[in-house]
Amino acid sequence: MISDIDFERLTLDVCQVARQAGEYIKNERANFSVDRVERKHAHDYVSYVDKGSEQMIVKALRELLPQAGFITEEGTTKDDAVANTDAVANQLPTYTWVVDPLDGTTNFIHGFAPYAVSIALCRGREIVVGVVYEIVSNECFYAWQGGGAFVNAKPIHVGNSPIGDALLCLQLPYNSDAYKPVIKRLIDYFYGNVGSIRMLGSAAIALCYVAAGRLDAYAERYIGQWDYMAGALIVKEAGGRVTNYDGDDYFMEGDSVVATNAIVHQDILKAIK
Image (cartoon, rainbow, N blue to C red; front, side, top):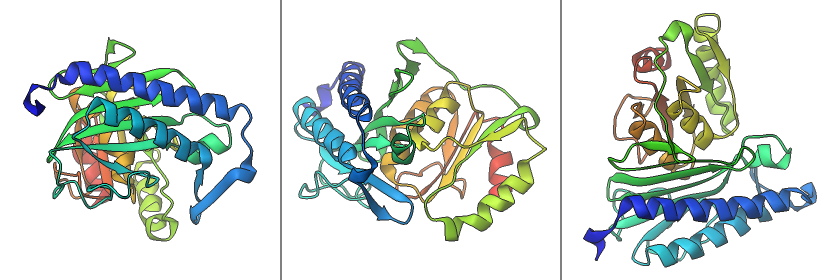
């Protein structure tokens, strides 16, 4: 029965799915050719590896929870009842998998870490399972609702730095024309007034690094639900806070995310506004 799902057990099973997809990605990277890369939009790439990973993940997740729908980045489940970015709130199935088969594709193409597999399970308007596997470092970050957050079986928690000492991640989304004025203002606002600023190239990993206390905050706009859904749960279960750019705690339908150690959250929102 749906009500009898053991989310801890399911999360650990999803970790294995993510690791298997990660092994496929790792093996393909050893002989990867840029000639097999496609452009989805300007500076937004996809390869056969993204698509192959997604097919593996979807097949395995169907076996774990046959009644669940899907939201997937590369469209493997486009014929399912739920298979697009507007579907979370009005989904037909009670449960929906949200899958990014290779987050950080540009990093992957260049052989530049990090890049990851990201898998979340939503129950209506709640995220109940989140798994992010960073392939190069062999780190599996995961959480289930109410169970805490972990990396490779070790509990993790957000850091406690104030804004003056904080390490921030301010990402550069593909929509450069729209976001360029914003990122210029954010860098001008924070540069020299915080510990330092980084850019990772993977939203899922940036979120996990906030959860693990390696970063104190992360902000990005013009991203998909598959980019942030799993990592957002991991941050929340690690004691952090996640909102959209407007400061709303319900962020699951939007394209913006602010994730922090909670201490610096208002500082980040103030800068954005």
